[in-house]
Length: 413
Image (cartoon, rainbow, N blue to C red; front, side):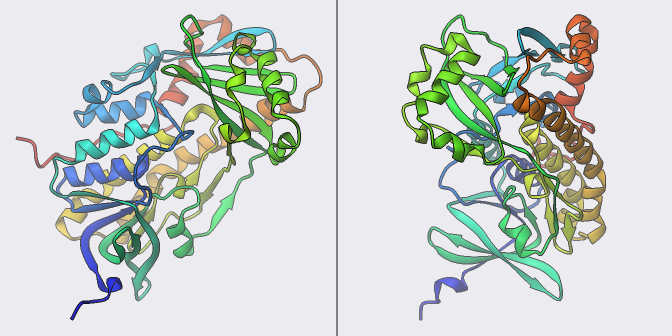
């Protein structure tokens, strides 16, 4: 007699929901330490555009410590050692990464799918590492208040995965976070971002450019033969924009960045533009028995500074450092889960506070301004005194607490 599909049960040591930067890095590191891991990714592939694509020096240092940096840098990417922007009519330089105490002294702009595919491929050498594509975590199982597994909608039918610990790395709209009843504190975000592609030509500026002026903020990130561009609007402003002809937006972009005037026509329909609804929130408690949230599931970040991937990866490194040994030895305790939050939450809160300050005092001020904008005094100081640019480079490139790999590769010969 054939068993019904929903009776399929798999067992593993750690089940990770979400094949994003946090989930893939944690899965790789745990498997490297001999812990059986299943990573669930609800999509059939990693090919989704307009996701965070700034890989910072802190993340690349973790890759170096894992022995992966050289191979990662063979993937398509653009290297930026200095961040600059235009405020009003003034071109300013604000961060110089070339002095950081890391092996990669730059930001690597690379499509997120390249980063995720790289980790997925690298993990294939570990027999403990399994990635299930087209497999969505839809609910949790629990016994006596302890999370014991995940219910999964997979391409071959429903199944249940039993695990010693379940990690929610399924993003800012985390299903498992909701199922676990975790309380989320919304810190507020007054902006949204419209993401789009515009062609990049030989001779175009190579650095990442943020353009801030009277009534606008427009960001350009170099990615091979195109720029990933972000047009910042007030929360809810996208609906107002769509009531007007698309040519109005094209003309506005051309006015902000004149050298793009001959390329804005590539935006032919509103479907060429993707809305990112900006959210800044965090959990007051990241864990409960048998369960832990990391990355955006624990703390959604603003796109300001492009730090989202790197905080997620830092969470993963910290989680692997704390959990690998107890999981491998079968002695996981609630205190191990609490240790992850204790180590990471202060760095997250500091970064979110900085993002909120920039949103309120710089971005919102520019969007609301009707008068010409000049660089603030602190920006003029950074622009005029090069050594000072090392400080914002450390904050952006390393974060407020850099995590180092402390786990062992049991497969090394």
